[in-house]
Every structure is written in C-alpha cells, then in structure tokens.
Length: 324
Image (cartoon, rainbow, N blue to C red):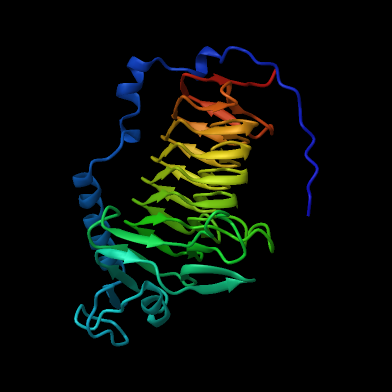
C-alpha cells in the first residue's frame, strides 16, 4: 500500500552549539563507540557464555558444527552436534542455549510468516552464541543475482521476542519485494519481532531489503553494520535501537542510513541517501559521531517528526538540518 508522506520544509541552519562537541572532547567523552578489537570482542563473548550458562543452569545447551560427522538429536554435545543452526533451534525449548563453532552456515531455510524464507528462524526465546566470534562464524542468506531483493531471496535471521543472537557475521541476506511490508520486506540481515529481541557483537554486511537493509525492529549492541542497502528507508537499520554500534557505507534511496531508530554512543561514517538524510532520518541520536554522511553529497541529517532529537552530536564533513 502506497503511503502519502506530507513533507515539511526545514530551514538549514548551523547546528546549535549545545548539540556539537569538538573533536578533542570526543576522544574522552565517547570511548565506547571506538571499534572494539578482536581480542575485546572474544572476551566479551566469553563473558556472555558464562552469564548465559549461569542464567540457564536448568536449561539445555545444544551444539552446532557445520562439519559434524555424527549429527544426532538432541545435539547436547560436540560429538553429536547439529550441522545447521536451524536443526538445533528446532530441538531447543525456551531458555536453551545453542553454541555454534566456526563455519559458514548457508544451507536450509524456514518460513515463519507469509512466503519469506529465513536461513535461521529463531521462533522461540533461545540464545544462539558463536564460540569464537563473528570473524569465523557466518550466517549467509541469499540474494537473487543481478536483482538482490526478490521473492526467492533468503533473509539471514528471524528473531522472536526474548531471543538473543551473539557473535556472528550476517551477510548476503535479502527480502521479498511483495507481501507484508514489515515481516516480508524488512530486515535483510535480521528481522526482530520487537526490541526485546537482541543482537550483540555481530557484523551485518552486504545485506539488502526494502526497509532496513541490515536490521529491522530489534536491539543491537556492539554491532557493525556496513555496506547494506535499502530501496526505501534505513540502509543500515530501521525502527531499531542501537547501542555502541558502528554504521558505515550503508546506502538507501531515501530516509537515511538509519530510519525511525534510536542510537546511543554510535559512530556513523560514509552513509548516504538520494533523498532525506544520508545518515539518519526521523531518528534520535545521543552521544554519536557522524562523518562524511550525505544526501546527494550535501545533507547529513533530517528530522521529519517532532519526536526526533539530537544530543551531544559530533558532526564532521556534513551538515545537519534542524527545525526552525
């Protein structure tokens, strides 16, 4: 269904001094948005494993190894580990933890809604955690060659309320071009039922969708979203909450690298749009750094609703549009 958008005219002004902090101050005020080293990411993942194990002492731990020689349900040790993440999810019950070792997981698929296929459908509140981090653990969707988004495309991950995903690279995901605009055409890398679905320490790269090329509707912590596209809104993320994330080189037809989202302690670099906000549109940005983000090489930010807000923003190589 085509929606009519009533656009408001904004007067381009110099950003208010209270919204900008100089670069020197940013080094001390925003340490959390600096890209974590691989060592730090692995340590954080290890802590996550310990916490999840303590929280789910009575729940099962299931194992996944793409090269498992003897995959046998219920996959409760490495010897009988599943070869696909989906097999382990299907065996799991609410509260279970699933550990996944190194490999590229690019086979199989599951439809949850309509005709949209997901490489991994976490349709219950379980935690899926890589053992050694995103650099060596990949969930790969499917983009139709030469077209990208098409009804045969496969999204990387579907996340239900209460589900958690940590330590993966999500790549090559895409969505349908028909069907439900939210559930079937949004979130090429990951689609979440709500912000109660959490993605942590993941790299979302090279994904595509109509809305939210990288992610839609969820909470993302310490993630990198890069080189993803959307044909309508939010090349990096759409209707999501992002904390301590890095967004770079995401592109979109209109409505910014992120759209209708809340960002805290994030860095946005080189995102672009043909219209309405290369970096962010209709979003709230707190303690964020923007660099070289543009709309047709000019505008970095647009505010399209009164609920949009900017706070302690560092802006470099771009201009911000603020309301009168």
